[in-house]
Length: 429
Image: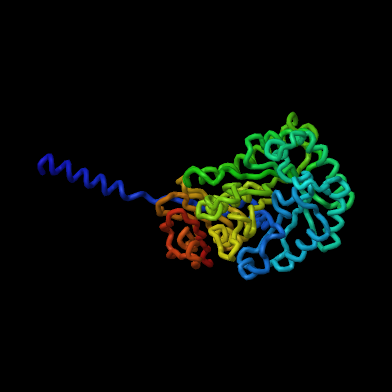
């Protein structure tokens, strides 16, 4: 072959080789068990009385809440927990499937309407009594919401971590007098301000002897930037959980409570905090991020994880104001089917996120393809064989179609930016 033709042949071969990507290997070890799946982390949401429960009852059966936080975010700073508010919440619960674990936020901030706020310790105790009278079985009482924002965002610079801790102590004592079994949560710091974790650290230092559930929020973007960059922020789930545990265990940083055993939880999370922007909230990127963050928090041992929000809150929510399902609906619907315990699952590609849950002789393997291109995955699960797979991507969600399916083979082709649940079973002996 002449040199010129040889160079051309080699170039064409190189291009052909470059167009073929080797399969990603996902390894599942069904016998290496981790924590149990908890509905309070896999199906936890923020709920407010404005959400149209009655209009979407049939859809809610597909995404039953395992836990609810009420009255959801800033709503708790702007209204009192009076008889009407708690009664409406109790009525809404009768329209929902299941019996979700409940968390109620007490009021701490004054709000902006100029009216006196029912935010004293006796008001917190009164709310506990009212909740009990209305049949609300509240597990957690969270003291306030995002107190780190009261100064820099809401204009009252007197609200330091030290002042919040004093209020926390007083309200916690009042709640416990009315409900001795109550678990007290806080400080519910924001996810949008760099100083949020510093506020949490100071709170731990001063109130480590009082809190039962240490809480914070995760909102890593403002609905801007690239999809790829936004998806990398799933690491915030791991980072913040590790930070909270490290601070808690450090005698110097937690002199009053480091010997106490408490719980950790995220009481609000979403890829963006900008309720008025659809980007990263009502799109596929936001759904994949939410699904992966939920799984990381659950595997990491969080006691609660409340996505923001359950329904129709601007561009937050699994279902929109017209009753239409968003991509997050498809994501949490898949998660709601997972039962059992987490088992080891690992991908050799950082853009393919893998998690597995075992229930007896069945393993459900969650594969999230964060790449903008389809990816071939080879599943190695020992004696467990692939029996089928359901998936969704942006097109399926947009069309409000049913989940797609993949052949029951160990090698699967995952669509771009998709989430798939692969069912594996062990053959009978």
